[in-house]
Image (cartoon, rainbow over the protein chains, first blue to last red):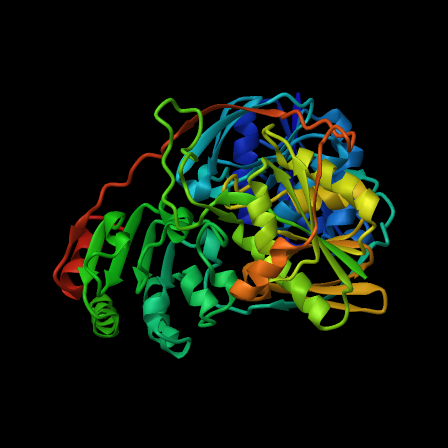
Length: 311
Length: 249
């Protein structure tokens, strides 16, 4: 039995989500191999080889893998699947795009977003926005799985010295082509791996008012997030969204400001270690999950918190 | 150009779901059911493409129990032209649904299939990608913008860290993200009109699809409840707690 983990990388380094997926692979058992699919991603393959507990790195280098097009990456996964009992990918936008395509080509029913491994064929996954946890057992020969990164503590990024083996990539499908990418440039930590997250909701009132949270995030070296209500209202971009339909985060500290705490938002942050809520509505459901709450006008409270933090 | 849209009947997003006492699932009896919100966005997008003159016919498909007819009627009221229900009492998992949709696509030959990126009941986020794989078509998941021109679909996708634009050869699969559009409200005249539109019923056996589940649900439990904490009077007290009690800053 061996487990193949599809690495999330930027061609230079391996993203942290990969380390969470490797942790899930280790819980399943057997040898853990990591697949780095990309173009000129040798540095990422070297980085993957250093991940603790990885036995082998498969490196597929081809122009058609450069932009992680689902058609090409899924075909690669399928070409390698025969030697593996499990295929894993972190539940990132790439993992969620690629893995179901590979699963269908292999005629297996994917298990999405696992948060625990009970045995090599039985897994726990949240359903209904995390309002229930289902334990499911797969009868498929190959298990295709996406891993909710907050469910597994990352393994160490260094300490391993796995061999890197080159593997061939299937030809370009020709079905789709990459056109462009707009990356949000930010000095802040990445939302899903930040130690502290400061999030704003509909209570912020406008996109302009989110500027009020910036000095707070600066002071805490935090990533910035938002509720779906704030995204829907057009205050901030969608990739800030924390919740069932956005990003799932579990930082050490989550600060929810002007967020009422709809089920769909709680689904994305309730596993945070410490939750702080600032809301003027005393009855807001966010207070039911917050460790520390302040009932008050955020436009007064937030500047005061910033002042206190400076002391 | 013909477009096919799939819709799923799910527990309404405003309902607070309860896990059944026997741990076999969540309570769905006497609970308000609605169209999966992402599927509503998919129907709306198809209707907008039709209004823009790009699409000539919208076929909406659902798979599941007889009551899915209501969901299909809602889609017809938003503006779909006709509906197909693949009726079954069986539990349907994404791979099975993708195979049913594949069979419907073989009959209907659409140039574009639009699906919600994820259903808010099982939160799987698989069916669109699986359908694309089975048909050998390109896919653009998590779409926030769709443009059809010159036999291709140009789709902007919501990805981690920003946006990405792909160009797909048609026929193609698109799955919707939140910001693609804001679905219209269904008006009474349109609900009345929808009642007269064609709704065809098929059976999985007639489509030659084996829908047997591959995953067995062993149990369903409520997640551990998070204990509510304390209210603190002011910013000073909050920062003090975070520094000295939680020791998180």
